Length: 322
Image 1: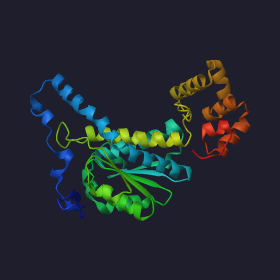
Image 2: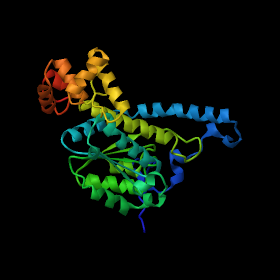
Image 3: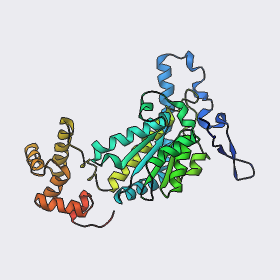
């Protein structure tokens, strides 16, 4: 299938950005002086070099906190209004996106369809490389079109290079349909940043192995996606204090976690926590509102409905927005 490559933006001496298609000009593709002679190092030296470079990731992410905060609020607003967060990625970036989307339901009890992912090559690409698909703008547009993005949705494209045609095309399509768009990349002045409303750029620098963006770049993307969904779910009130009160109690570990959360939040014994959770229909938010507000289960359920699931607002019995 023929594809049209989208050029990367490059800053010229004259000021405005001009396009370039050179992969080799990207920061993430350049040589890393700290890992010269890497193949001659001992196992301990290899580990030390990688660890030293990994320490740069958090600092790079820190510089993008204002943009990350904008995306957190955009996602919270979208989910509150019945919209979706849709990640789009390819290769390592797509797998990071899929991981974050798949982990939201057990941790926050949101419906699976509210946080989704699109992967170049489809679900099979999560385990087996299907790299050719990431070069297709047509497939990116087709796959996002099938999700029918609207003004209620937020679409976030992930690409370490910032030039992956599949991702750029999908984000551009979603933006044209009115969706709020953002991107997470590790190079400045890229086509993906130009296609999105909000650009999160974590400049982690050259990889220990040149171009191996499953390393620092992927670590930065993992940190940022964690911030976005954790922040959005917290803004929605699915976290009380720093406790994951919307935990989905579907297995023994999560049941124990729910019991422990109630014990800590309300300073009660294990037996008391178990009893209240049972009377609350195995719902930690309902149990917490019952205990904190001193109400019965039906009233706790009504308060949570009025607050849109925001536990703190339900306890205070106010529908005021965060």
